[in-house]
Length: 113
Length: 115
Image (cartoon, rainbow over all chains, first blue to last red; front, side):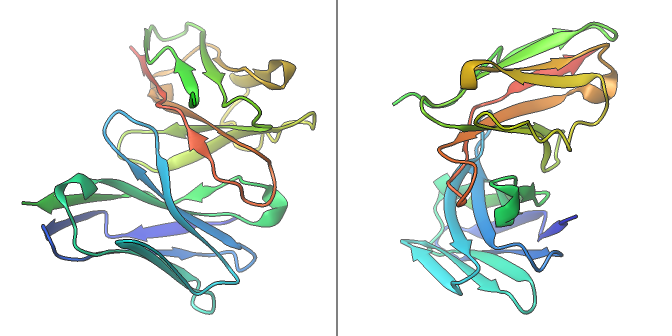
């Protein structure tokens, strides 16, 4: 089955700097790659997603890139702010499994002010 | 509008007891998922309901785990004869369809502690 690896496990950046989190997946049939942000005591919230027919997607300070050949995708956060501090999860799924997502292990992002 | 609601938010139980965890999905969402999140770990898929189809139970870790979804809405996850390794946060999510990759909306989870 699908396996998703996520790096780094923790990331500390200075406020205003950029943060990059990378994930690799094993199943070339996967075609949907969402990113979730989880704050303490809350459930994960979708922040951005990308489908396999797109190489890059942006939403304000957040962008996701996908390299299907290499089977990896990345989350980019620019101009980080203290409120970006949270745990970020990448995930992958394929159409035939509906929305059953396989998650990475998560990245703890700390933005220092 | 109201999001996914889970109850209880916290549950402490003794080893060997049965527990029931409840999930109220977003109204009108046809797909419902249960995930488990162990301390410092990612989310582990447990079970998935889509409309009237047979549930996908492929992620349930043992036959002590079961889930129901009544009337296409509320779902209950039951763990029988709980073990210490069952301690985790159990997250429920719903989506408007089970296909086409409509986003999952998660509840805040039930933190289960087995003593």
